[in-house]
Image (cartoon, rainbow, N blue to C red; front, side):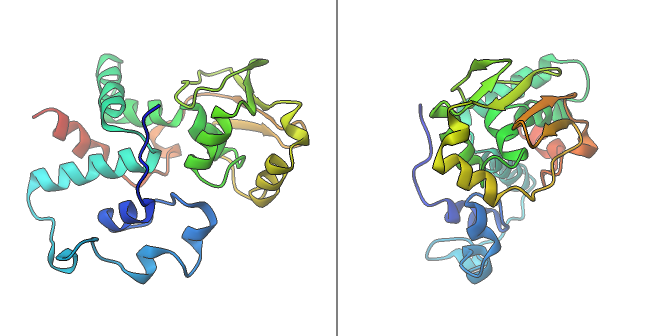
Length: 208
């Protein structure tokens, strides 16, 4: 499975804002964006985003990095969104939100999407009673996600759940905190997605 292995703090600095890729560190004084709020590199302080293409590219990159997805898969999701009925940009965000690793993060079962992806790969979660270890698994309305019985006893999993127990859960997910399971009530509408991107710019980027 291909993945980005460089410094994730540089990704936030490149986009000029926090993408919350490192969990609790992003809320502390150690956050790189707070300490060095300029583009990384020798000439970072002098760089400016001015062209229309540059804005579209940066928005696509920000969304891709926000969800932790490589270019090929992100483009594939865009093509899926184009084929669906409705607004392409909103379809794209809905697909990204329905990924299993994102849902695990949204439920407060991980501190970041990267941690959620790792926990999924290690087999800590079940979908409709069956173990699923594929972070890109796309959930559908009505499906139930749960922490596996064995993982409920894991010291690592317990610590992660405790650390994130107070995080608000979006309305499109019905979480049973005691049973550690959640139902996907429906896929989210645009107003239920708080991802700080302008999806129309991404549509324009791929439409060139």
